[in-house]
Amino acid sequence: MLKHRLISGTLMTIFFLALVIADGWLDGSISIQKTDDKPIQATALALLILLLVIPANQEFAKLAQLKNLKIFMPLTVLLSFLFATNSYWLQIIKIDQHLCILFLAAAALMAIMFTQYLFCGTKNVIANCGANYFSVIYLGILTAFCLAIRIHLGLWPFIMFVCTIKSADIGAYTAGTIFGKHKFSPKLSPGKTWEGMAGAIIAAIIVAVLFAKISGIISWQWAVLFGQAFAFIGQFGDLAESMLKRDAEQKDSAKKIPGFGGLLDVIDSPLFAAPFAYLFFLCALAK
Image 1 (tube, one colour):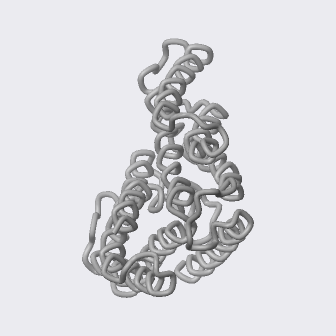
Image 2: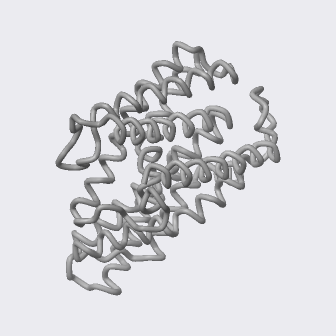
């Protein structure tokens, strides 16, 4: 299991980093220097989000189905994608971002309720509409912060965020598998241990400090704080997804990725951490 996880994780990381770096090279954001006159940013990443949001919604829908809840695909796919990529489209359509989000939130609720009326009538209205709206927030709005880091704050903060979070995941799993004895959250995730958490913190700090030294985007002191904080936040993101799986009485969200399970099992920690990372970089880069 550890071997499969390390191999799958390494291959996915290499592919992802190659894509976002190539994307940055094409749109000119690979340079750390910022300019006011920038071309459209993160086109390849926005397309990747489109490809990922489909299976992610499918996995969520299967978990919801086990609780007798109806997810209205492809509506949730469309809404999740629109929320997730709003920063991308606002580079092209110059309108107020806050009003855009508010309008999308209102339109999403109305679209979900209308679809509920068409296909399910008055059966499980609150439960179905709540589950659909939750899926859009979880897979759409949280993902929007990932793209916002990439577009608003730059390519290198985005790569640092992803590498730190995923290194924490790898450190937690490796240390927990080898040394784990003391359970961290036995009700939600029996495999998580405090030894694994220590491994997550150590791995995250090492990667964050190395990245800060190489790129120079933040100081090593900020990097140490970043590694410590996001090792914890990333693991809590994993626990948040575990709540969904335990409620549906499933160990994994799917069985598509060797060593991980499903796509939700891969993206849970960066999704949960993305809003906090956006706020962190706003503070750190302002210094």
